[in-house]
Image: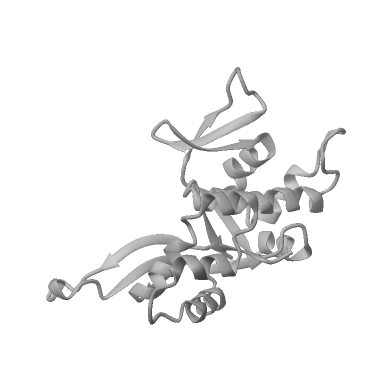
Length: 201
C-alpha cells in the first residue's frame, strides 16, 4: 500500500510589507509547533492543495502522486516542492495499518478546530463534526472521542493508549496498536475538512 500524505500546521495567512503592500505578499505563514514557517506562493499553494480532496483522504488513498497532480502548474517543480514540504514536516507521510502509522501518532498532536454536533436519534452510531451548525464530517464514536480529547495528551499515541486501557469485548480492535491503526486512518479526513489540525512534537 502506498503511503498517504497529510498536511501539518496551521494556516496563518499572507504577510504584506506595510511599506510596499502593492508588491503582494512577501510570504505565506504556516504555524508549525512554535515556529512560523515562511512559504513562497508556490509552496503555499501546494500545501493548501493537500487539504482539498476530502474524498480521497476519507478513502485512505490520498498519496504523494495525487498531491502532485493537484498542485501541478506549468513550469512548477511540484514534486520537488512536495519533497521539501515533507522534509520540513509540513507534510506527513505514513502507511495505514503499519508501524509507520503508529510512529505518526507518536510524533504529532491533533487539535480540534470544528464543533462537536453529537449523534442523532436516527443514527446514534454516528457522530457529527462541523462548524456553525453545518455538518462537515460523520464518524464512529471512537474517532469522535479521539477528535474531542486528543489535544489534551502529549501526543495522539498517548490518547490512544489511554483509550485502549479499557476495551470492551466485541469491538473490531483488541489492543492499542489496532485502535491506533483505526484512528490514524481517520486523521486525514479530519484535517482535510479543517475540523482538526496537526502539530508536530
